[in-house]
Length: 110
Length: 114
View 1 (cartoon, each protein chain N blue to C red):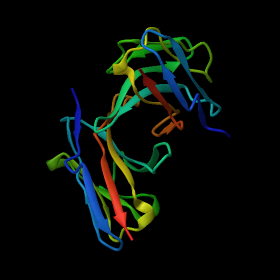
View 2 (cartoon, rainbow over the protein chains, first blue to last red; view 1 turned 90 degrees about the vertical axis):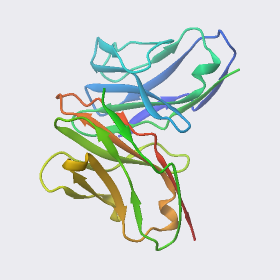
View 3 (tube, rainbow over the protein chains, first blue to last red; view 1 turned 60 degrees about the vertical axis):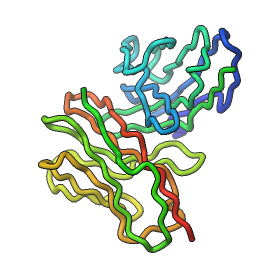
């Protein structure tokens, strides 16, 4: 199993551009999550999903959108990138009591 | 809302020194507790977890943590650290609602000098 994979690894965006961060898991997990990690701030939950077709907001959802059309994929969309969205983004999935994390996407918005 | 506090932001130790990282949470009900580790350039990995039973839990790589309910604490310990333990350590809490929605602490960056 590849586990949780994320693409791209790095990206630089200009203010106002849009992009989609991809996340795929091959463990048949129902639950999937998107976090952002800022220095000294820990991880903050952006959005989560309890299954295909069901998503909900986390702690910091503003400026982001998600969809979950399949069990495997949980893309995160930034519509109008802002410097405040410069961060490292982690996707995770879980079936029960342990979350498995992807390698992260480092995004810089200039 | 639940919150998690990690009071040590940066810790520097020499190899073979003992380690204790503090973690306190604010929630009065049943909680599930976790410690995750993030080695340089890598993603988060589960170090250990507590759900119920023996409050002293053992994890990978010689780490252990003790749940003290009266102090709302879940401190991480290791008797003798190695250079390879250099990493960032995150405490996390899940309120037992049947769905795992973790609240993370701000992390402790550990540097072990050889």
